[in-house]
Length: 594
Image 1 (cartoon, rainbow, N blue to C red):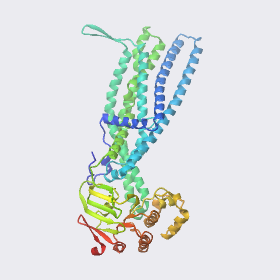
Image 2: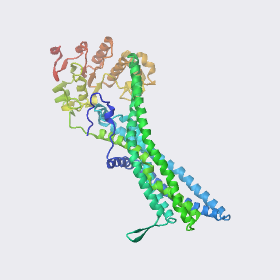
Image 3: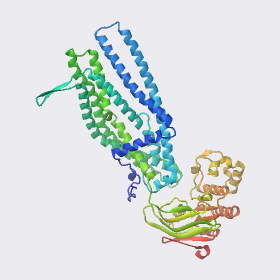
Image 4: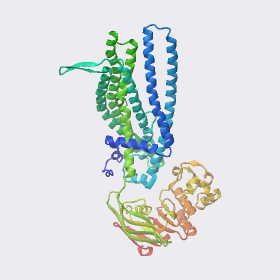
């Protein structure tokens, strides 16, 4: 379900918080993140690495049994003062130690490489889906979720983290099951049965140590779940506040000149301090929620280390088991408790992963959300008609009518100006022509979208060199430096000729007027058949504005133009007008509308 519109006065991003998902849906989504990679083109490496990692989990349990057996023999040898057998024990210890070192060296390497490749695959997949079908713009326009960029960059990273990520938790689960079986086998050798009378009959339950371990873990699990719920909620709020703070910092960096000119430093400082204060408050909630978890974990570990001694030492005093068996049983109990208590021990990690999975699930829902059928974009059937609309009614994102365009035709070679008061829907109409505004009903057809060029008021400048920004979407090597330098002179930007190959943030360095002249260069390079301009000369002085339109008339005499302009002096460059007023668009010759 699409999130509801943001109420007046409510923080935009507050409504975008990822809400907790049902447990089954949450883990299905986590499994889907795994399955997507293990069925990708990289499946051979993925499955090979996974099989190796699973084998290492069994190898780890085998090494634990070897070390436990060695430890029993060692303590029994110490108790019996067996000097002759000490050398063989030392040799066995070195062999086991060498295997453990090899295991602890190779296993993390394989796991980290696998998780790295999984992260790259997931990130690429989310980027492709986010950018496809203009979903990135739709999510922002409809305020569906907060900070999709952070979810792709950070949440994917943490989900695929080799130490605390989802795969690490699943491997730990396998290791816990295998190791628990090994520990139970060792404990059954030393544990006396639990004997009691029930309805006049004597009942004996074998493996008292194992039974006590299970009861201890169950009780601890209940406590940990109750204490962990506030932690999950606090972590989700903290992630949201951190993302808001980073977003505010980026806003200041990108709008530094405007902030300085408006003397808005005080307002921005207050905004940043408010965001920082929100981080402080939510971090305190996380810290408070961790108090209970940390206290429970501390008691859990310490009580678990003493219980087996109270159980096994009486049998040692009775001569039923050796001192080595006491120590081996203690180690097996201490290993079994965290293995049985896998959920308890890893609950903070799992809680953190749940919060990340919730956020990625919300991102998936936003990307996959299909809105009801709206404005239909098609390709025109006649080359003589550049643009055609049929029954077009444009609405706002949440259903309110904006402008009724109806049936409208723009013939090839015509030059139209769209006029109307601010907020009437002029720029929105251009977005609908570009297929970027689906809200409404009706049909929009362009003769050939591949030869159409949309020029917004604020030009898109990709990261890279100035030449790459000018030549976009062509590659810079498609045009000679001399050609670009000559065009810079043509549009009165010759002072930039020496910086063609300079790597800078050109979107921040170039003034709005310089950017609009760069847009003119792109038009002259691309030579479109249909040119749609949205206040494309609003930052230019009258002389450069006239020069802009004169160049279009001289070099692209046959181009079809649709322009949104507010300056009535520019109407003379057009021959038709579309007037938007009172929610309706009326077309006609420009002379009759002047």
